Structures are given as structure tokens and as C-alpha cells.
Length: 75
Image (spheres, rainbow, N blue to C red):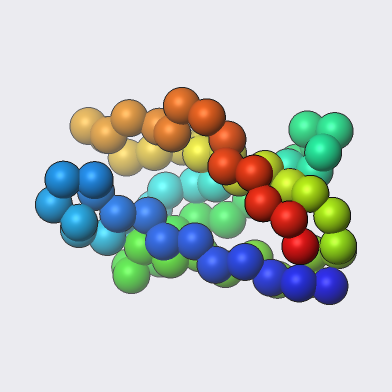
């Protein structure tokens, strides 16, 4: 099993963003878990089985655009 940590920042100001919700999806698109960024803009997902996943921005903050494409990663 493995883990991944993400950090969400404003592209222009580099300010960390708290309260952004991400889904972790498996290869079939099934939601494995959801995480929300903390006050440091970070979210950690642990206990992921070996495999391929997609990180999808599910809910963002007012005034910000969501990621347009999922981010693929492998454990």
C-alpha cells in the first residue's frame, strides 16, 4: 500500500488554499475516497492499494476555477 500528499496553491500568488475537495478515483472512475485540503493547503491519502488512480478536483473555492483535467498517478 502507498500514500500520496497533495498541496493546492493559487497559481498566481502561490497562497495555499484550504477547503478544496478532491476525489481519488480508481482506473474505472469509481471514487475511492474524498479529501479536503487543510489550513496549509495539504491533503494526504493513505492506505491506497497498488494501482493507477486519478485525482479530480470535486469542489473548489469561490472565485477559483477547478482543474480542467484529472491528474493521473500510480502507487
